Structures are given as C-alpha cells and as structure tokens.
Image (tube, rainbow, N blue to C red; front, side, top):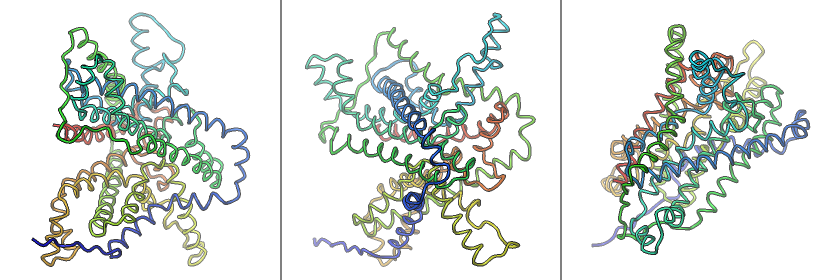
Amino acid sequence: MELVKRTYYWWNKWTGYSLLILLLVATPLLTIFFKIFDSPGDSWKHISETLLWGYFQNTVFILIGVAFFTFLLGVSTAWLVSNYEFPGRKYFEWLLILPLSFPGYIMAYTYVGLLSYTGPIQSFLRNNFDITFKGPLIDLMNLPGTIFILSVTLFPYVFLISRTSFLQQSKSLQEASFLLGSNRFQTFFKVALPMARPAIVGGIALASMEVLNDYGTVKYFGVNTFTTGIFRSWFSLGDSTTAIYLAAILMIFVFTILYLESWQRGNRQYASLKGTHKPTVRLEPTKPKQFLYTSICLVIFLVSFLIPFFQILHWVSMTYQKVINQDFFLLIYRSFTLAAITGVVIVILSVILLYTLRLSPFKWIKNITKISTLGYAIPGAVIAVGIMIPFLAFDKWVYNTFLTAKTAGLFLSGTLFALVFAYVVRFMAVGYNPVESGFQKIGIHVNEASRLLGSRSTKTLFKIDLPLIKNSLVSGVLLVFVDVLKELPLTLILRPFNYQTLATKTFDMATNEMIAESSNAALIIILTGIIPIILLNRLINKKIG
C-alpha cells in the first residue's frame, strides 16, 4: 500500500487569521513594552521613594505564604483521598474543590462579617455566655489575614493537580519502596512526593498567578501590593506612566514564576514505563486514623467553604427582600450576557487557532497559539492598563481628526467592546484548552478524509470537525463564562461609566459597609462557579478510571 505524503502550506487564510489574533492578544504586552521607555510620571518619584519597597515586600510575603499553605493543604488532602479509605472520602474528592467557586474578595468580606463584633459568633457568645470581645474576634484585615483568605480559596489548584498525579502513580514503585524497608510515611516523601513535584509546582504556580491578579482582597484589607499601586496611580493620581512602570514590575514577577516552574520541570519524566502501570490501591487504616483523616478533611472543608457559604445564605435570607428587585435582575442579565458573549468569542478564536495548526502544523504556528494563550498568566490590572492606553490614544486621534466638541465621544475606551476585548486576552487559555482537547480526540484522519473527497477547509470545519467537538465547545464557553463572572480588577478599570456586573456590585457594596446586602450578588457568583467544578471532577474520575 503506497503511503500518501501530506503536504502542508506555510501560508493560507487561516494563518492570516491566527496572526491577527496574536497581534490583538499581544496588545497589552506590546503597550507596556513600548511605554516603559517613556519618561516617568510626576508621581513616580514619590511612589518609588516611599511606597515601592512596601509593594515589593507585601507581594513577596503573600506569594511565599500562599505557596506554603496551598502546598500544605492541597498536598496533604490529595494524599489522603488518593491513598486511604475513610468515611466521606468519596465526597471529599469533590467537596475540597468547591472553594474555587469563592472569589477571594467574597471570602474576605464573609470572614470579616463572621468575626466582627456584630457577627454571629460574637453575638452567640454575648447572648448565651455573656462573653464580650473588643473589636473583631480575630483581626484578619492585615497581611497574615490576606494570606489566610487567599490560601483557603486557592489550595484546590494544588489539590486537584496533586490528586491526579498521586492516582496516576504506579503501585509497583510504591511496592518496591516497601520491599526496601520504607514505611508509608517514608514512601510518601521519598517516592510519591518527588514524582508529583512537577504537578505540585504547577498547581502552586497557578495559585501564585491568582495572587498577583487579586485586587479585591488586598484592597479591602488595606494591604498595599503592586495591583493596588496600579489602581492608585491610574485612578487617584491620574498618572498612566507610573501605572505602566508598576505593571512592568508586576510582569517581572509573572515571568519569574513561569521560568521557575519551567526550570524545575525541565525534561524530567516521572511516569512509569509503558505497560508496567498498576493503579494505586487505597489502604484501609485503623479506626482512629480513619477518624483523624475524616476530621482533617472536614475541618478544611468547613473553613474553606461551608462556614462562609452558610453565612452568605444567612445574609441573603435577611436582605433579599430589599435587594432583589428589577435592578438586580438587570444586573444578572448584564453579567450573564457579557460572560456568554466573551465565552463564545473566545471559543471561536480558539477554533481558528487550532484549525490553523491542523492545516499547517509548523513550529512557528505552534508558537503563535502558545503566545496567544499567555494572557491567563497576566494580572487583570496589567491587561486593563495595557489596553486602555492604546484605546484612549485611538479615541483622541479620532476626535482630533474627524470630530468637533459637539460630536465628541468614546469609541473604544470606556465601552463594552474594550471590556470584552480585555476578557478575551485574559481568558483565552481557559476556552482554548477544552477546544484543543476536543480536536485531539477526533484526530486528524477524519479531517484529511473529508479534504481528499473534495471538501474545502471551511466546509470541512463546519460539517465535520465542529459537530464532533460540540461538547468541548460548550465546555469552553462554560469555563470562560464562570471566570468572567468572577473577574474584578480588569472590570473595575475598563467598565463603562456606571456599568455594574455581579463582581463589581459585590465589591462596591462590601466596601461601603453593606456586606450583608452584597451577599445576594455574591451567592449568584458562587453557585454559578460550582457547576464547572462538579463537571471537572467527573472528567478527572472518568480519565483516571
């Protein structure tokens, strides 16, 4: 049988589309790169002399603290549910992922309300035991409190990836460790943990990216970081150049984390030889140990999700009658519509990038797709500044060239187009990955058969490929939908005047001491975030099973 040699062309219309997408997605980074050479703004000297070192210290301390506690919480619980049988284990496999549905700023407001003088804990102690505290039961509005809040909301990143790694490790390696005289504890540190190191570091890197993106928590707690510095420079001081300088420094943190994650992973392989994999068999410990393992997982779940969730439900029951009205439903409609539009746009762009790669699988085209999805690693405040500056310049050019004072207006900046554009840059990777997985499952041969029968590339895409990956397309839209719904810093900077989303409404009400009222919008965000988490857990179980 004669083999048919595949012929790939380095240029076609799909390649042009992909290059255009790359150019658009790279806009924020290109803006920061070129603007960094401008002269510093008026406020830069003041910030560099009095505030910059504090930004640096706080950012580093939060990164280190969150990395440590997400490692401790995520790896320990992942090891327990992967290797031991104990009451509730099957439920904790997905219950411990639920904190991801809690944005950090919502968790912060909830715990401050819980521990405040008028909160349920102190009220119970005063009314039943006549115990009174001055001020909050525990003061979280500081640097350690910020680390605590971000750790309990972000540890599921490490838990998810570590659990998958532990379950995929071969039983044969652990048996060899036991034969050499190691106990279960020693085997964990000498075999399982080193094998899972790339996965664990990857999870910590994801959590670190979220730390750098956070604005709501650090702003509410009064902790100065580079993100709050960018907001202060842009809104309070009106100094775009200083905001650019701070954004550039923040990007150094991002690239350092990405480099360290890539460096430690290197070319190491931590997998068993093909054909020798034996799945890990869970041990059934003694009853006291089973009780201990259940208690550990239960306490972490209570602290990271159930207690704050019930507090939000309590606040909703108290305030829903005066909060839920026509304006509230309009708020939900706006937020859901914005998130859905962004999800659809990202999935369409992802299909274009991936179909280009199928038609012309050259290395430079692969690099285009990788660069196009780097936005998830860039903090939202950086993207917002990097987009706002060229959009403002474009609006100024249009005004000076074509318009008069009577007809002046904003065409790009301060519009929903700018906001959706920024969301696309930020969350491209979120929608891209499910679509890529769908294309990989159907393979290239079905596509080639259609082309050999005379169908053009566009017809093949719509008639063959898209129907086969429709579930992946829906998954991509859903994941983007949830992330857009939670996004705060980017939305605060780029939203049109007086335009609210569920996230910004929650933030504004909480910062105006209307924490109970803000819980209604917060509950919608949390409940929406739970849906993809449950679907993700089912997908992981199906893959491993």
